[in-house]
Image 1 (tube, rainbow, N blue to C red):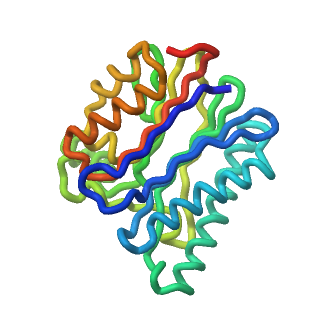
Image 2: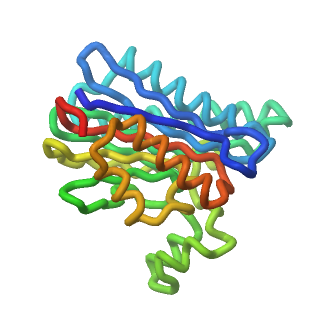
Length: 247
């Protein structure tokens, strides 16, 4: 089993924390790690995020996937189901209109992890000093990066950097990305909401991940760095290590 720690923080400029994070373990010893970042401001984004995490966790415990291939299909099916439920609530409740959420989630299997995402919450793997983003941002600026119109660094500075092109609860078709990755002994999995990666540089994140300290302290340090950089958004960080020992 992967050793996991996480922390979520309101940041310095938001009135409420619409991020949600949780870890679930099923009867086979597999883990589901999930972060959801609610969108829609005061329009119940926190409700969409909360439901996404809770429903996904319940399904994982009651009807878990047994293999990575199962996991890929499971994510597609369950995310679509949550999407339908949130859309239906939006239709029937004025206060919930326009609510939605991003999601990044991972299921651990033996030395493999299946990672799903929609929106701009991210997943990374740290392998031998190299931090690789393993999710695809569904954001307006990432479309520009992909076409070569702007660089990744420029993307972070654009005012439109918070505009996402896909989310749960926004359109009838929840188009998630799901992929399977190998995990070597000692590799670290980092999952986070945009409150972290938009404020803390990648090389700074690597430095913290490589420190010989407990995972809880790494999470706390990354959250503090995002807050020290202004904390413009809610910040959520989850770190898992594929190892029997810490560090």
